Length: 86
Image (cartoon, rainbow, N blue to C red; front, side):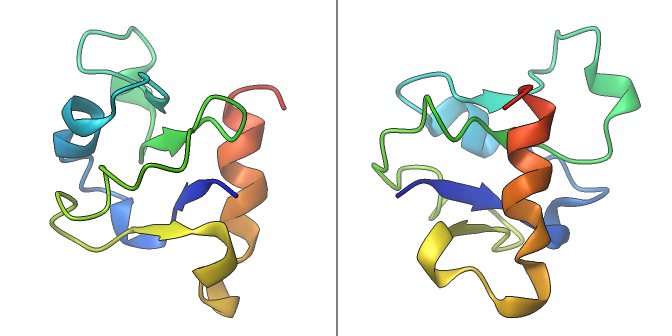
């Protein structure tokens, strides 16, 4: 199972989750050329180790375990994966 960033992140991009991730699977980073053009952050479903370190630091509660993702945001599983070409 992996974690997914959902709709509450749109327009926020707080970056606390990026710093909390021990495996560097949340993108784009502040210095990434793609950052200004992205409206939210994304978790790489292949690289995520399911540690949950990102969840408590998210100020808008946008990060969910894939199995706990609210039905209305199920499409964000694919949105996160597509960002990484998965």
